[in-house]
Image (spheres, rainbow, N blue to C red):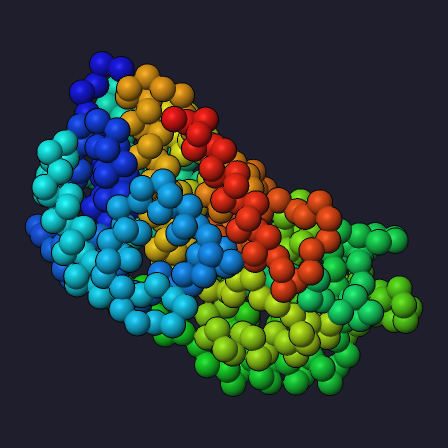
Length: 438
């Protein structure tokens, strides 16, 4: 490469982790951060790596998916996980931090690194023709100007500004004595699972929906919903039958067990190739998490369902990763540009930092003439990369790390042993992979 440094745009979690990883491999880094000259609507501190919502990095148990991800990052030398451990506050099994100490320490380490130069100015555009390797890590509140620049490279139809996420559930927790397989109007079993409701069940469901607690919009969010992607509680407010003519439409879904048409039906669509996860079709929502669990368990066949991810709608700029990203996190059509953090299509502090780690490593390896790396699919890191690059582009949504993203079990494993087994398999695969990289 003829470029002398790596350019990183954004001094949040992903940008700082990427800068650290690249510098640790001996590469010069120019880290661009617009604070303190300009702040996003969610940021208030002039420090790098500011935590804007919760101070929790979620479970620290290595038998959980996010705990396993953190352990993999520790073993790969993550700066942010190291500092999180050092600034932790009591939080049971979770890793929570003193957010001011956390950000201050990250800022100090990045400022003092001899190969990292922090440049406090806003960047508003990308140059796809530049030879300078660039990591874009501007986060979910990427500015309109930068989003426009990214859209020119990727195509605006592949860039989203609001998450509209439907809940994801575990197939094993469904009651298949009630639920049946059928695609609309087709004979025989179909690709969708259907939860049938009679009239009383439907009326009770929409009554609970209409009286449920919702998550209020943040100050910088607007109630801008697409008509084709409305929250279910908004549809409910439009009338008693709105949902029956929308995502709960029963037409063409006759129950093969009873020979009757349901009054309404909730459809579940396969989320992964293995069929271990399903999402509730059209059930994007701003209900609070407790309300989602309470009300969605009123759906026939879902009384004891395990939620892998709950639904949400919030401001979040992200790309259609399966259509745009290589496994190295480079853009397919502009390989000198890497995406990291939530912009790449993940959710959560830890996941965003993890993508910064991988983007930083891969950009640095390209600069020094080494091949890109891809974590083994058995690892949490590999599962996230697989989600970003192998999901169906038509239905892609950002995701937290969860065991449903991991490869399917070759043999059935009892539920209480799965976390421990995932840990064993993942860390063993990571160890072999690290030896190969050395």
